[in-house]
Image (cartoon, rainbow, N blue to C red; front, side, top):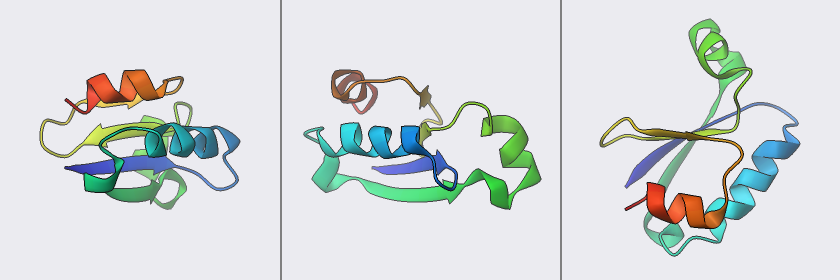
Length: 77
């Protein structure tokens, strides 16, 4: 499954989100594309105040911070 991981530079919450993601049972099978929202005005307006955000490519569902690894397990089903 492909995920877009919307992030930004020096984002400590993004680091925490990355750790929660690594704790999921699905981590080894995920294709994760990190996207710096500051590289796009549109993405910055959509996600700049909400990062970190994970978005599934297959169904476009999103989960925003705060989330736990249990929340992610449900999100990745």
